[in-house]
Image (cartoon, rainbow, N blue to C red; front, side, top):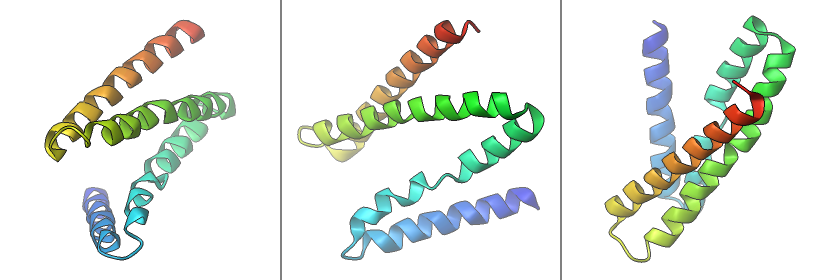
Length: 113
């Protein structure tokens, strides 16, 4: 039942993005995926299973996790001027992957894990 609910919720988000993209406020379609649905779940689980200190660390890491997303957006903005959209999206995702790898590597070294 939980899996069905998650699938329906995901489908509803996709429909909402599609509807918003057709309005004069099409740019709001970029805000909808950033609603902290999964962050709420992760923070609840970490906070209830690992405690407040672990939750605070998770929150700080989440703040740093904004950097790879920014790299993705910046790369996509740059690449769409010179590539077809599917290739620009792929290149931007690869940039996100590199930025996420760098973040995880630096975080692991800084926290000694």
